[in-house]
Amino acid sequence: MSDDVSADRPVPAHIAIIMDGNGRWARRRGQPRAFGHRKGVETVREIVEGTGDLGVKHLTLFSFSTENWRRPADEIGALFELMKHYIGADLEGLARRGVKVRILGSRDGLREDVAEMIRRAEERTSGNSDFHLNIAFNYGGRDEIVRASRAIAEAAVRGELDPANLDEAGFSSWLDTAESPDVDLMIRTSGEQRISNFLLWQAAYAELMFVDTLWPDFSLDQLADAIEAYKPRSRRYGGLDAGAA
Image 1: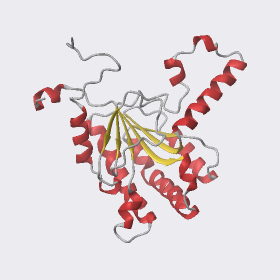
Image 2 (image 1 turned 135 degrees about the horizontal axis):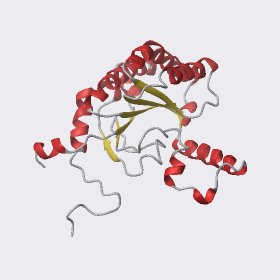
Image 3 (image 1 turned 180 degrees about the horizontal axis):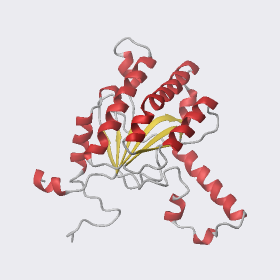
Image 4 (image 1 turned 120 degrees about the vertical axis):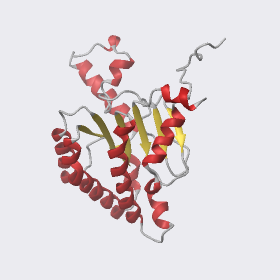
């Protein structure tokens, strides 16, 4: 497809990124995993600052999964501190730029200081709408669906919802990502080719891209290249291409 035709195609409204490879990046440099996570935060900052300029309105980053609790306690502690540092250092700048921050995932088991930081970030940016930044933290796709299903069942028991009237759109409104559309493009760095329990419902028809670059080396230029590669893809949603026989 020519560049002219691709240029006319819409950019993805919602990009989700599995930020993988911090540990390997550090290991190749003879450094502890925490060193890679710190460098990964610098990449987060670059990508968050530039994604909106590429025309994207919603960005979801996979930061810490429900399965990551199996990692060593010192690494988990380092990840929590990095999350606090990033939000603490960047929150006012994000708020001034019209970014709405939403932390996806369960709040159960989080340290109180981390939970308070999450509340503060969401409250400070709640009135913004120029760009939506979702950070999946203590998140798992199956856990999200179970939590939504439980909340729906409890609402039905209270008589606030008729299960017979529940459809896909209604179910989506109970998910953590209720304010964002379904994922158009999902990217995973580091060369691994799986989605690792990330946005299982929202990514039902997402275009998937797997890049070999480790997350600390991922750049805004590479994100722009991924968007350009996305544009010519034919998204059929189970149907046929326009003009197909």
